[in-house]
Image 1: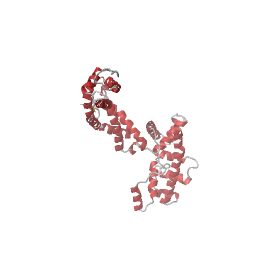
Image 2: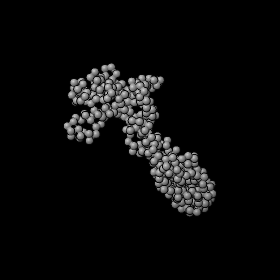
Image 3: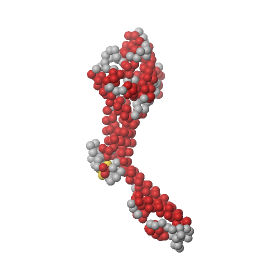
Image 4: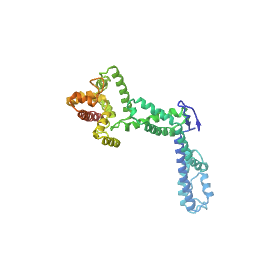
Length: 368
């Protein structure tokens, strides 16, 4: 084992000579084959009452026995047939290992004893490079922007550790590059796979998540230059085929809309009951938090989806028609309703928006 510095300052631990996992597994496979051969030889020796010297002598001769042999120690001809089968396996093992059976008999049991220390070494290598996992987890959260902030950093690190373990088991220093360089790909792949469980109820492939993240950043940049730019027009400007645009649109929705009825934590229910609030207050906030503003803005233009009062409430609540978002009290005063009435209208409108998105966008993604 050798320690080499890397760009992360972790003192990355390197394995030497060969791929850790392949060497260990191959050695254990050879040991298993050796034990099987040794067990069969012992069984033959006991069955036919033969001396150990006789067995070793026949193995060293490396020639098959003739069932009609005149050897005085061959009291039963069946021994020749059984011994020849064992001898075939010995020849194959010697061919695979390129070592004589006498040498294998000495070294394979010793290699078996190294399994536990080698596994401990693997754990040490993984522990010595965890800083690399933390670094990649932070980079991924930053790259995903606002979505990335929804990810639990500890969960990402745990997933990345699984990728690091795979990288260590497959690493070969003979290829002349650092473990950190080799492991980055495995770590990223493992963390990206975990994203499928983090965003929404529709599982999306890793490449879709990355593409959506890139498009969202582009859309936000374009909106900064042109505040009136709609999401649909942005997709049209991409010059992509219609079915591709539908996939992108529905994928955006799948990552922003977790369910029509998001779960309410038990603690939220208790607090709602404590202050005499309706549990739907918490539900409404959860629904509102899970919807992207861009989708709400798109839904406002859908004919017949919302009533005029619902459109007005959403415009006021999300700040589409003025510079800032208004409170329920302020909205109620403007539309002639109470605070509770304004909140009920918003909740009803958001339910319609979510149901529309689920039925009109997600189905395109699933069908295509």
